[in-house]
Length: 86
Image (spheres, rainbow, N blue to C red):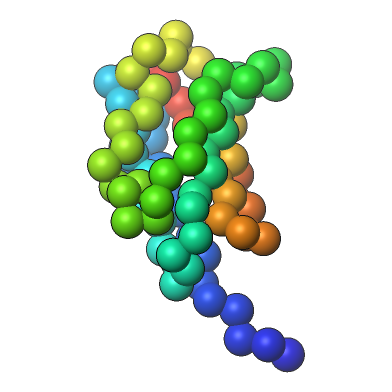
C-alpha cells in the first residue's frame, strides 16, 4: 500500500451569511480547482487557484440564500462539501 498525502478541505463558516472560506490540507503544490453548484446541479462558479492562495478566496458573496455543493479538486483528489447560505 502506498502512502497517500492527506488531502482535506473544510468550508467555514457554515452556514454562512456573507462569504465562506476554504481551509485546505494538502502536501501537493498543484493547482486547486473550486467548482460550485446549486442544488439543481447548475454551475454557479468555477475557479482555479494555487494551493497557497486558497485561504484568501472569499466565496459565495453574490449567491442567493440556499444550499450549495462545492467540489474541490487537486490532481486525483476530489472533495465535495455542502455549504448553506442563510
